[in-house]
Image (cartoon, rainbow, N blue to C red):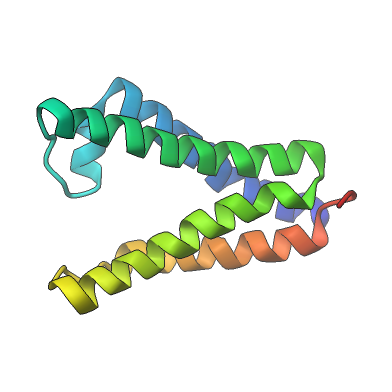
Length: 125
């Protein structure tokens, strides 16, 4: 059970890390995958810097949690994903953005998965 959960949790950790690296190496492809245009100038700098950092922190925290067996490393990833989902819902409610259910659902599901993993997998606090 724990081995299966470890593999399931490692997958998004690896995918988020790869996504962060892709923002650094192929911002045009990354932006297209998220339904946004590639910006120019300071906007491009913001896209690359902020989004690569977001995904690298997300992925690396998950992987560090698995490697160190320390529960505390799950919490930044849970917060990032949960607040992203909340932000998307607020964007829809307050700013007439499209309700991005296809993005919100995985964020919520992975947040719950990480919360479960934080209770089952760690051997250390």
